Length: 463
Ligand code: ATP
Ligand code: MG
Ligand code: MG
Ligand code: MG
Picture 1 (cartoon, protein in one colour):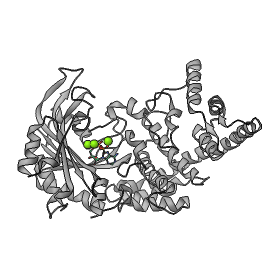
Picture 2 (cartoon, rainbow, N blue to C red; picture 1 turned 45 degrees about the vertical axis):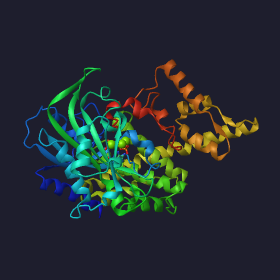
Picture 3 (spheres, rainbow, N blue to C red; picture 1 turned 180 degrees about the horizontal axis):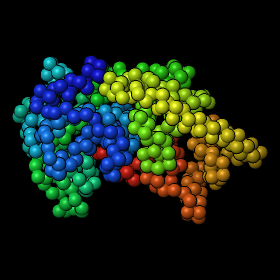
Picture 4 (tube, rainbow, N blue to C red; picture 1 turned 30 degrees about the vertical axis):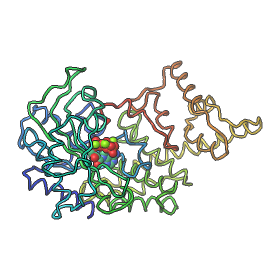
């Protein structure tokens, strides 16, 4: 089944269950100050759940374009995470509740008329003390007890790390559905959230029952397609592989699943898709908030290209491939292809400019080091080069590695912090506690970057 077919099937299925098809909300919801990017399908329905808006319908279904900055370091590392992805969802505003939500999810997944997934390959989780959901899975669906795992709030209360702690707003226990492609492997494909509380303020009395009980579900489009197509990662599905292949071609490498180049091609694919959608919505690379996310995604992809030997803008060439892959669901992309490509090309050119100028300066530092028999790049030197000439530290580090030298990240961070405190100039953006550059520092090294998770708490979606 093709990606476009699954998207349509899902919406059609829930239409047969009385749902109104609602278009995706924008990717950058400027109306919602609590998030930079739309993190889930439910975002546009928050006020519906709170009973704040007059409802034209009590059941809705949608395919929402989402972007999760918290997953940035999972990209290329896990088989199933993107920054930009699409979330299919069905929603009940005080209408049906757990029983229908669970029964319909199962019907859609396993019925031969719909997805026809082998039920033996599915397991579920429920929240620890959610007896009601556990009973429905066991009795209505007939799932064996061993296939119903009970997990705590870390996994099964959404969105939160504990029922009483987490962002203010609508929340509730949830039940996740996992697909097992092989023995020992599993991927979460669908989360059914039983939205029944509004969380306000601090525990213990902060979970207030909502005026009515609601349903909010989210199924990952790419993940579900990957399971149906039997491919090893989300990036191998029919609408992403052509972009991956184009990335490989543009970078002059042969794409393979397990290679370093392969990982870089997948990351380039993810980031250029995210940037295409953001720039399409007029969010250009810049210094703050969502603009900075776009800049960071772009630079990170450019650095991947740089590591593969490219020295000129290349990402922009992938924009038409993104548009081609996504056009049937988002035809409006075709109207801005050229503008998007040229914005991306310009930012790439700027950045490549810094990279090349940086190379010379870095070479000189290496020469000095060789003369003095030093093997560790001092953080202070890197900070000075950044502050005086804008030489990106990631570039410094990458080149140091190529010369068998080490790079003193701690010293670099310390020097930057010192400078920030001294001059008051280092801007603390929402991206990272230590300023914009800190958030870029892992670009070449897939080590966990915690800035987004810690500073964008409201946008981080757990569950
Ligand atoms: P995971 O535990 O795998 O990170 P999650 O529990 O954070 O997923 P939910 O918040 O429950 O995800 O979102 C609903 C569904 O959206 C998930 O079941 C999954 O199919 C999909 N999804 C979530 N995050 C991503 C992502 N970064 N890339 C692709 N699909 C995703
Ligand atoms: Mg997650
Ligand atoms: Mg989940
Ligand atoms: Mg999960």
